[in-house]
Length: 172
Image (tube, rainbow, N blue to C red; front, side, top):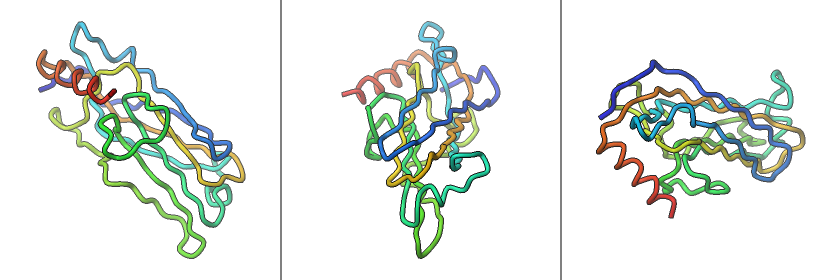
């Protein structure tokens, strides 16, 4: 299906949530995706790091005793958080605090780890990844760092076309 052109590398983007409105960020893939050469990005895994207003600050005081953060990575700009059945979603995470049970992470059913083999992974041929995050109740700034582990691959003509068509169909 795909021939790897590079070893795995990591793309990183940090978002600062300042209130309960949705926050957006973009990871530009223009340097990695080339339609003429059928070059795309193979995503192996997505990791999330939650921090308070400073690198050493805890998330719990910012979220309060009962709060949560939703964060998603998509390959199409949906303009906000989407349901898990959306074809554009690549990864998502939820971090929750509970006054009774403490801090815990709850991921929804969509996989965030695709494996590292040449046939494993989520293939992206769009020119950007879109990050969206929302906090239920924030008393101070919070930071989310998204780390996308990926490789550049060359796809066969049929595979590149199928991924491009699926992405276009998901745009509707």
